[in-house]
Length: 86
Image: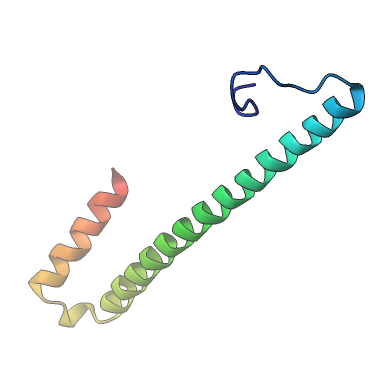
């Protein structure tokens, strides 16, 4: 009720058709807000996932050259794996 109420509730639909139209408008409004919110969430989730996948690919490529890894590379790999285990 809070999502769909505007004002103090002193004006509201009284007829059956008015109530039906109000209910349809409420559902459409909530649907539009939900769609917009999910689109934003999907954008941020996919961009974060892409960054993590790039990081994993960098680690895999480093492991392929394991004999050439520096101490800093070892520390980065360990830090990443510890973070993932938490």
